[in-house]
Length: 268
Ligand code: PGA
Image (cartoon, rainbow, N blue to C red; front, side, top):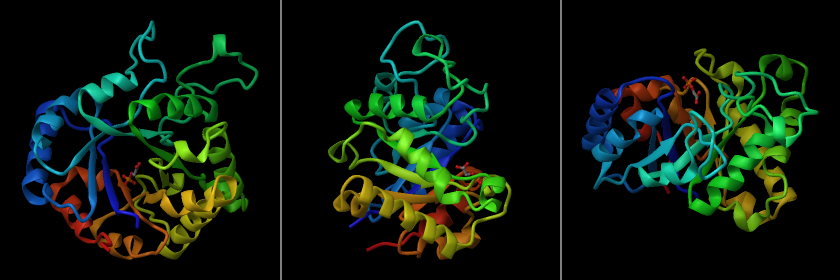
């Protein structure tokens, strides 16, 4: 049985004080729920304040990114053990806002000159391998752009994202993996993917996992939908059989709205 997961991706919003206050409000309203899993993913600097606010509740903490080395000369980066030390259990990886946004990597680059900020399947693969031994659960984002969808390439794009990110990993390592299907055209646009279509793609991802690894993994891994999820559309999305939760951006910054979304979650 897959427990529904509702994760709030705060993106680059809220100071530590503001984040702590929002986490505190949410904790009072939904902090003791055990029928679903609720995760807050604030910016790095707000992680300790949110961790303090959530202490003693059932809500969990996640980060929005990570680097793959444990320590070293990587100015500006944050490592998996650092996230664990502040109480993170989850980490979002491969969000479309990080993929390729900070420089497009040349595919011929060797390791030595790899541009760390041009997120691609190779960097994601390193990150997934780096976080799993620390017990951090990756929320791996995949999804197509509007152009790719219109060209009928949705499944092909997602397949290559999954293949590259999970390259060389075996089923036993992936039982704590969470995948978020986030069509790029639906993120922050208010243009939500139709629930039956989001369900179809999540089901397709599950089948891919089952075929590529093993059937039990496909049954076990939680697959979320993300992209313009709001209280008004959450019920239909979260009652689709293949959708195991939501990665919520903008609506997770409003306590009322986020709380309402958690009430739409399917419980078993
Ligand atoms: P949105 O963002 O809910 O604001 O569309 C979702 C996300 O980027 O994870």
